[in-house]
Image (cartoon, rainbow, N blue to C red):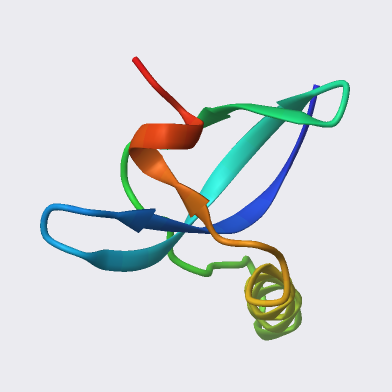
Length: 70
């Protein structure tokens, strides 16, 4: 199982936030219920984490309810 950050859309109310998404064989199967925030144990780690957030903005947006039913 792998994971990365993705932009997730929620419909009610319409919001966009970055969540952790977990994959099985390249298919997104799990998403964190709440959005995540960048963090690190050093300024360099924080910078790297922020860079991963920026990469999430270049991927297709996932819908919380449609892409992760149940």
